[in-house]
Amino acid sequence: LGALGITAEGRYELIAFRAARSEADGPWTGFCQDLVERGLVGTALQIVAIDEKASLKNAVAFCWPKAPIQTCRFHKLATLRRNLCGHSQRREILQEACRIYHAPTARAALTRATTWRRRWKDVAPRAARCFWKGIDETFSFYALPRAWWHWATTTNALERFCKSIRAKTRGWGSFQDAASCEAILYALTADYNQQQYQKGNPLNQNQSPQDP
Image (cartoon, rainbow, N blue to C red; front, side, top):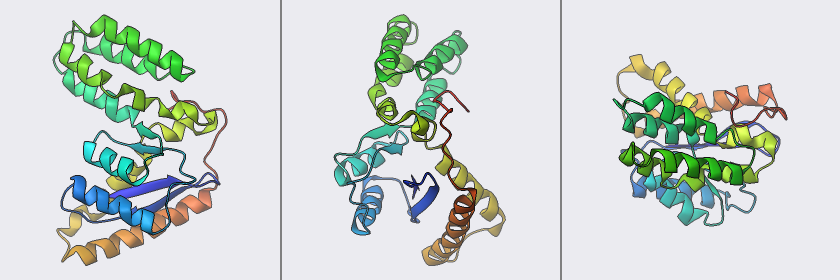
């Protein structure tokens, strides 16, 4: 389990990690409660971007009930892509869904989403129903300053870090125990944070949600 933040100065910072047997409610709630005990009480928390796991959403809502939740738009679209596997109009449906997140405002995005649902709900009912569920939580980023949109819409930065961890440790076989696993994670996390500090402020005023 891991948490990646963007500081007020605009830098990525890995603020927590934990080896866990699963991503069920218990591990995620314990992980988030530990962050609260360490000082992340949520008074300055602008938004929490998560994937689509209900266990993580429940944990965030319990620990930081006032923090807006942003469901990762790439996870949302990836789920839609899987649900459309084999559908004859898959490409068209996906392209129109992607255009929802190019909207300049939350209201415009909701209008596009409503139009999308009206058009496709009878053509691909299961996929449309799943995509529509909770779609408002993929628009939370619009409440932030535009300069933050690119970073607040997804969990991609954390996903990339996790992939790099797997790549670096793939040939190691297995860890002796949880402590040895966390020791390695700590070293890799410290190295990542140092690299991010050296990069400086990632914010670019010209970037928007559709930028790669």
